[in-house]
Length: 392
Image (tube, rainbow, N blue to C red; front, side):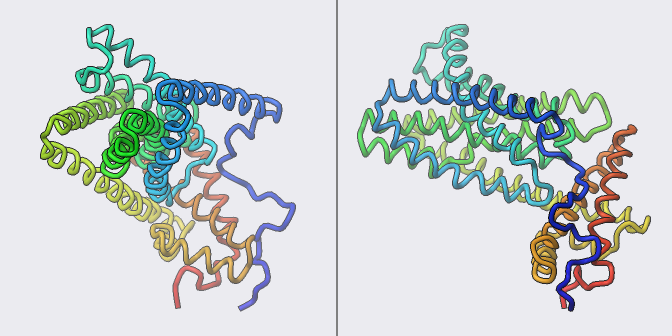
């Protein structure tokens, strides 16, 4: 088979039409860099304030150890969320932004508002009742603001429930990592290596998915709000998701309080099932998205815009991987990038068709559909006469 560049493949120096512009790049370059600088300063100031508080409470050595061990949490949670995001990848800029929100803004806000809320309800700092009543409301509200801002400011970036889960989960990952720094540093400063190990075992090894699990409820509500055509669902879904997150968080903290007082079975019977629920939700969401892509792209088989083998490829991660490898082996990096763009556009087209099926209407949807079909047509044309989508 020829290894020349396929007909219609991108060539160096030539831009291929893209459906989704990179974050802020459609604005004048000065405004773009100004916005980036302001966000960097804002997040940096919040992060510095958080670390300063930790250092003042536990010391430099404890803070450094806490930061190093909390990275384990990120090594567990972030890959899971990126795995969930494989079909329709979110812009890295937005993922970094919501992560920074959780790590810097939400944690700093929680430090202040938890104490303030405790004062309002008459709960003293350090009282376990604060962890069960005030902290869930404050922390889930602060974490939930990040995916809510994405919904309000970059609505087109949330194409389904999985997108909402990814944004909410990344926010929670940042929050969980920094919160663990607090507890790990405190454990070392109060009980040395034994305290550090015990805290690491409980917070990092046994419950790394706690905060992401709570926030997934908000993410599901945000995703339903973004894709529903009914105004009642758009308003109620995020609120219900937030309520579920708060209740789960409160139940989790209550179980942790009982476990501290000797009821280890409470920890095993409450928190481990919640961890299993997290895994089940993530796996189910990924399978559901694959089925959704397959179902809604079949509409375009009838219109002649896609073929059944193409739909089968777009609805399967292994087949997508094979298609990119095939294109890269025969047509180089440009061919692989073109195949990746075809797959991204195919995912977005399926999710857009799902929104239409759920009752959303409007000129923008039709314009987006036309743009996506144009991108797909340009990307698939070089391979129409090949066996790219069928192994062997």
